[in-house]
Image (cartoon, rainbow, N blue to C red):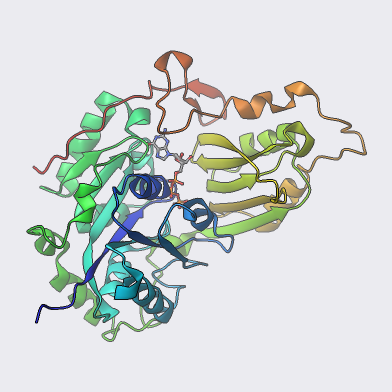
Amino acid sequence: MAPPRRVPVIVLAGFLGSGKTTLLNYLLRHSGGTRIGAIVNDFGSIEIDAMTVAGQVDSMVPLGDGCLCCAVDTDDMDEALDRLARPSAGMDVIIVEASGLAEPETVIRMILASGSEHTVYGGLVEVVDGAEFENVRARHPELERHVRAADLVVLGKADRAGETELRRLRGRLEQLAPGRPVVTASHGRIDPALLFDPVHRPRPAVEQLSFDALLRDEAEDGDEDGAEGAEDHSGHLHAAYESVEFTSARPLDPRRFLDFLDGRPPGLYRIKGFVDFGPADPVNTYAVHAVGAFLRFAPSRRRADEEPLTQLVLIGSGTDAEALRKELAACAHDATGTDGPPRPEAMWGVLRYVEPPADEPADASEDPDHDRDQNGAPDAGEPSEVPVDEPDFG
Ligand SMILES: Nc1nc2c(ncn2[C@@H]2O[C@H](COP(=O)(O)OP(=O)(O)OP(=O)(O)O)[C@@H](O)[C@H]2O)c(=O)[nH]1
């Protein structure tokens, strides 16, 4: 009798804002009939990533709040894997998007320890932010270990990095993890075949991932049964970060919110969520993404039955949660008081940070990259169109 078919489980990891959700959404839209189940782990109790992925996926299980590798109960992970992998669900592959602060090796161990007869570990894809990698690596040398643990490194945001910097980064990655395959991508556009066929492909991945080493680490942690709690997380990335959530039914004033973003403290590395600008734009909700100095807004038309709402997650190190919440509350638009009705130019500042949808590459002549320098001043970026490279396996 043929052995039961096992669904490969791929871990998608990478630092805060590196482009994991963008890559996952690209894969979902270009899966070519492959049925993908997704497990999405948000760091923060408002599940922004899960909301972004929901609706595009055959089946999605959110696993919040906190890092997969410590705050999420292993039972929840086991149950999510089991639910997606059982034959009746008909999934071909499961992708686990870890939070931007998770330790990939620990997530891999959780999958290996899950003991589900329906799953097989399918590899680690580590997304590296081509525009921020060196800055982040200087602060968090742990990222080098993550790159070494990867089966495939996606060197993302190629459009922001530029050709010379990309060449330099590829050299750096080769130095850190010799022989590791690196694929360059803009807006998460990679060939899905790189991920979706891990079971039928001869996999040097076992050596690259060094399961033995992973399992040895596990034993050294005194956590041999994979149970949560015995591991020391003090050296993990998430130990130094905290998340702040902000929800408001009152619309935000676009100018005040931009002032808040311009003046954000340096430790506040990541902001993501959805903003309602009320009467300044009554038809759209704006997705907002700040990653380091990078800032983007993306409008999308609200459904008729959708209540306008602002939901933000702010992730940083050494930030003052109460002060941030107060500052955000003070961004609310007050239509009855001094604010009055919005002027047409109120949205101009926000619209400067809107770019064309990722699948329609920007016209290079339009100066699409309004990144800011460290002082928050607008700064023209690189041309945005860099072709997706063939994977380099050497
Ligand atoms: N220019 C450019 N922007 C990108 C690219 N990939 C992602 N982004 C943008 O970077 C921001 C963060 O991307 P996400 O995909 O949400 O990053 P993430 O790794 O899922 O973020 P966390 O879950 O917070 O760790 C968003 O504004 C994306 O649109 C890229 O290749 N080029």
